[in-house]
Image (tube, rainbow, N blue to C red):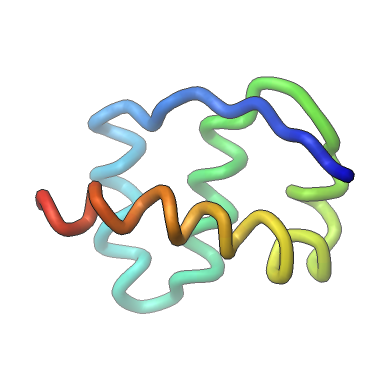
Length: 70
């Protein structure tokens, strides 16, 4: 089990994320995670496999309502 504690993205962090996500969602998600990371298992951020198949799926679920509002 891996755990990560992240801050809610600020308006400027989310604004930076949105245009990049339209071109390269993986890079945009990784940047957002690095910007919002507080503490936890760095493997979820630094390990490509764990990021793609662990954390990215969770972030997609969390960000879906925010994208619908924008």
